[in-house]
Image (cartoon, rainbow, N blue to C red; front, side):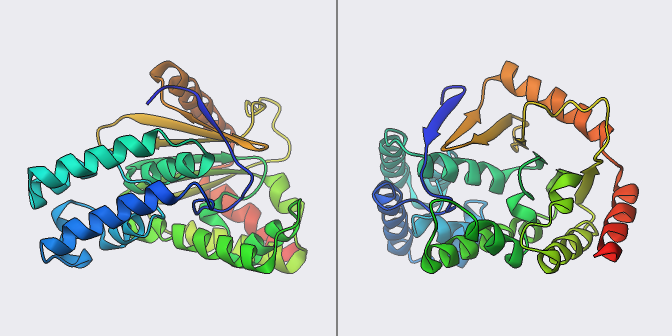
Length: 286
């Protein structure tokens, strides 16, 4: 894995794009065949390789980029040949271009993270978007999406949000610009659903939601949104997006810059209690 790698995309979906998902589906089919040969269900296999059965199901369906640790863990359960086969399949995946693969890799990093941080100045973070907001954002995308495409993205995003429930020991931190709520994308009803959702999610003991006030003279977020994730081995990764591109950041020096910026943004945003007060005021004004 190299640092600052860019990948192109033309689809907003969290799922692999047609034509780029063949390798993921093949990997998933291989994993399923190895698992069933060992007479193990997904519910039995998942705990043995220290992943949830839900995560294993997504990998077998070709909807998640497999984590680097999976071949070694599968080898412990299924034997050396299984590990060798999965490593070979993983090498072929890394040679495939396209954002779908890169997004799936970031999604895999998210799902294993012990710390996940997000600063957003463009839209409410995907992990915090209620369905009405997801639809409102997608309906305003250009070029326009079909209803089928929108439904597919909505389903994928809501499925991904299960992370907040499935990872109770992961520390989630979100910083959201107040202007994203003031903008009222989709109208007042949609905005009410967003605020209600933020207030509800923010009650979780492992989730912190902070709002960056409209006026903040020392604001250090001029470089745009950023995401950070800490792995079980305490390695940090960064992720950013722009029009038609994304950037997975792995070089320690570059990730350190993002960590410094996020730390400063966190100190500049309203604390959690002040955020709740602001959200309640905004909700009452609608």
